[in-house]
Image 1 (tube, helix red, strand yellow):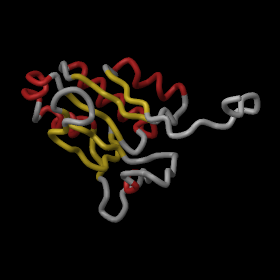
Image 2 (tube, helix red, strand yellow; image 1 turned 120 degrees about the vertical axis):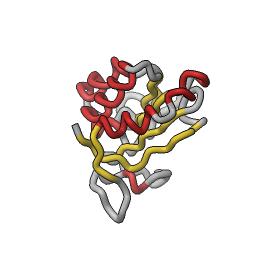
Image 3 (cartoon, helix red, strand yellow; image 1 turned 90 degrees about the vertical axis):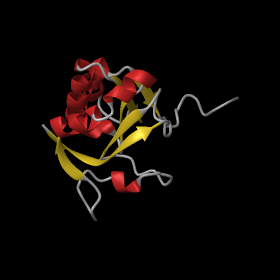
Length: 144
C-alpha cells in the first residue's frame, strides 16, 4: 500500500514517550490559520513537499532506530496533516509497527469519519487528540 508522506523525523523527544520517529502524512481537511505545517494540508505532492512511499518503506525507516525505542520506551508517532485522511495507510504502518513490538502514538484532530477512526484504533498505544474548535450549540451558548 502507498501513501503520501511529508517527511519522517528521526529522534523526536516531543511526540510521545521516549525517543521517537515521527511520520508526517500529507492531507488535512481543516485549513487552520495557525497551522504549524501548512505544507501538510494538501494530500498532493507540491513544490517539493512530500513523497509517495509504501508502508514497507516507512517501516524500514522506523526500524532504523528500533534499538533506541526499546531503551527509551519510545516508538513511532503518526502525525500530519491529519492521519485519518490516509487511514488505510496509517493503519498499515501502525499495524506493522505493533507486530514487530514498536510502541505507537497517533496525533490527530479526530477530523474524520468514525469508520476511519475504527481502522486505526486497535493499533494505537497512545492517542493525542488536538481539538481545534467545537461548533456552537443551539442549546448551550456558553456559561450562564
